[in-house]
Image 1 (cartoon, rainbow, N blue to C red):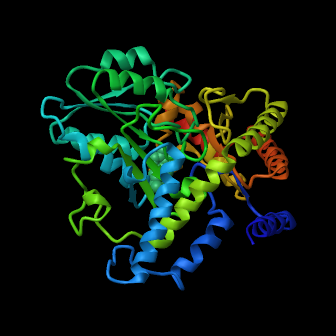
Image 2 (image 1 turned 30 degrees about the vertical axis):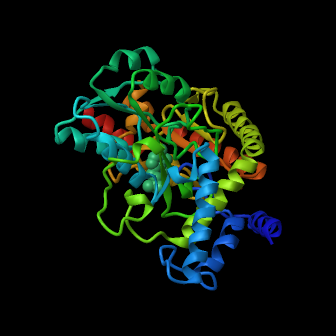
Image 3 (image 1 turned 90 degrees about the horizontal axis):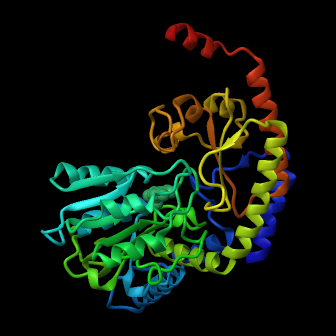
Length: 410
Ligand SMILES: *Cc1c(COP(=O)(O)O)cnc(C)c1O
């Protein structure tokens, strides 16, 4: 069923001339049909409470959860006993940072980065309000952190460094192995939000000296509503949970585990570990075609963030003179994202793009384009033609809104 389900899905999409083109894989990646097949029985015939210890239904559910735990652990080089299932990466980031913040009373400072996901920044802000000190490092114009600045920020007071593996807006890959070495040498804990990295690039918590790592199911073709936090074995004693309750997940995360979601997340991790390398090669080729095609029609576009230290499936492009919101309104059949719409209801331009030094106008002219497992060459050809047409049209037509804004600011 698995391969035929995949073929059926691709064929349905190919037959449907005017189906939307999905280029927002960093917002969410569709659950792989093979994963759905594996999950389905766990809602019905194979249901069960994995914490029920008195009957075989519970034991079978527990076995399935432990298989999933091994699959998640294997993807990042962890031990199964170091994986804590959560509702997603938002919860995992909260759990990681709040869980270790009070560990060592002599260390009361957290170091993080201005381009982190909003849930990391807000978690740090809450701890700061409670008395921790927080240092937010800037990034270079390419979106990567400056290791010398990081070294200068680390002191004997630093408890934790939190640096994401891959940025969700610009796709840049931070030098985690180097950061891990720097932290371990100084006895500082390292947390990494790897929601955009796990299943996309190779990760190894041991080799990279990472103490805590957050994962999200729906970013790697697993189901929504599940994720995990890797917590290095030695840290698990004394770790503060977010929830009080039945003490599941070795006391780190109370609550009944969602059996079908755990099974799906595990399966998605296993598929990713098998197919990641081939998929990256295929997707990067599509991305190169897309960028070349857009550049041919629109020579003045610019890529935001480093193009080399970057995951295969991300482009973030500024279209000078065009409002990205207007461009997306003109292209309702292409699912993409602007920084403004991405993380909140506010229409502020992306703080990530502003941190790279883009001015407000260029940040507002930028779109995030996310390619992935089910993106086809035909999707790319159609998207390039449609986007270039609309950019040209928006640049030609004098835009009423910009006229009003010009009037207001004069
Ligand atoms: C999507 C995402 C999150 C949030 O993950 P959820 O599982 O949706 O809570 C956190 N960090 C990064 C980098 C993300 O891309």
